Length: 128
View 1 (cartoon, rainbow, N blue to C red):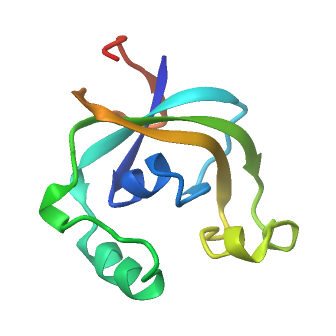
View 2 (cartoon, rainbow, N blue to C red):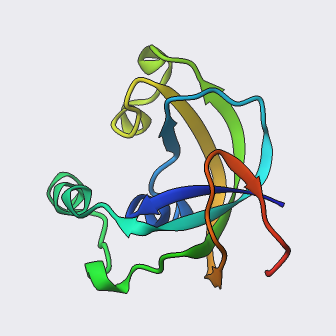
């Protein structure tokens, strides 16, 4: 199955259904189910900003985020081209950063399954 590596805390937000758009600098024609891979690196600046910008989302403590493996599963339903802000709801617009927006649906968290990440979509062995 295909997987996409996302740095924490973003991977947690996608897997728990809070972040419906994953921003990338590249386009994809892939559509369908994929596994959410949490990279080893943690974006501490984003973590601090998220806590202030989205107080309604109760983020776990920074040290509690799983890293280095599969943490969720979701469906990629669309890929928005740059400049798609007007097409989005106000709620979704706050997650879109202007490059390509991978529109994610039916996300759900999974127990950590250690897997080494890679760039772009990559194939992983079935560990779930």
